Image (cartoon, rainbow, N blue to C red):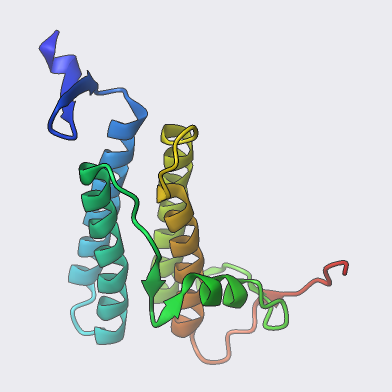
Amino acid sequence: MQEFYTALNFNERVLKSDLRIKFRGELDYLNAVIILMQSENPDNEKFKNSLEEVRRVITRLQKSLTANKNYGELNIFGLDEDAIHELTHNHERGYILFTAEMGKTAAEVNLLRTLIRQVEITACEAFINTDFDYAHVLNRLSSAVYNLIYEFLPAGYEKFFRFNRPE
């Protein structure tokens, strides 16, 4: 039955079905997807560099998880967490309507955003009764990646929706 167990944080053996192991696996998968996207876009330096910033966050999350420590403050694309939150909730620019017309690069960034959201949900499940900040970091990371989509939309893309929030 040993094949059903794996090491966690170097000193604990847990079932491979443990949500913390699932979380690790999803971080691994996310990292692999980023590397694949980078390798499939060798001539798009801006895209590759943006993905590398995301990959560094994922790698730091993996290290934090292994060390059993919090990630800490997220800074990415020159933005801190407050700036990311503010930009994401800028209702005046509108929210992107995702269509094939957004182009391959913007669609890939959106795919990455959705994968980050999935990993965030697993972090919520795995660390619900703890003080670990992994879900929070992933929430802000997905918001930062959402904002990145605007950078890769083709010129003239006008598929947005707007709504008025009650005051």
